[in-house]
Each structure stands twice: as C-alpha cells, then as structure tokens.
Length: 132
Image (spheres, helix red, strand yellow):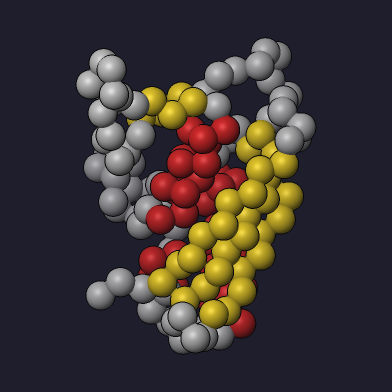
C-alpha cells in the first residue's frame, strides 16, 4: 500500500452540472465524494470513450450483454478490479462482490476500498444493467 506524505483534499467537478445556489457556478465534489465519482466513472467507461486516452476503460459495458450467470459475475469482478487498480492510485481495494440479480436482469456490485492516508473504509453500491 502506498503512503502519501500529506492529507490531500481531492476535488472534481460534479458531472450532474448542478449550479451552486448562491454563486450559480458548477458545484465541486471534494474528498470522499470526488473519489467515489471517479471510481464510478472508471467502472462505467468503455475503452475508446476518452479521446487521446483510449486505453482508459473497462469491459464492464460489454460484459453486461453476456448471459446473466455467475461466470459473467466473475468476469465483471476481474474487470472492475483491473480498472481500479490501474487507473485509481488513490484507493486500495478491500472487497469486490458482484451478485447476479436475475429478476432485475442485471448485477448488484458492492465495492469496498480504503482511501490512502484515511483509514475509513468506503463502500459503493451499484446496479449494473444493459441499456439498449
């Protein structure tokens, strides 16, 4: 696990582009929320979605069109672990659990990680389904 010398305050734009009530500027996400958004965006990004950085992404969207089985859930687990490990150096993954939800025609994902230099575990719950 990497150690950072200071306690950074991570920030990112809120991609919902909601205006700040007072300043009418785009709201910033900071700290844990910025990292949550970054992790979610990495999981949902396909290869070649980002111009000039086509190597950033995962096969998650492609895997959603496979059969909804435990084998596909294992492939999703591997794809999520790979993209987070390669492109999000601010976190250390502690658990990834992907379960099949046949009645909802998708996958429930529970991702737990620790932000570097903050010993609080963070958990993200996502529901992945194919969109036509």
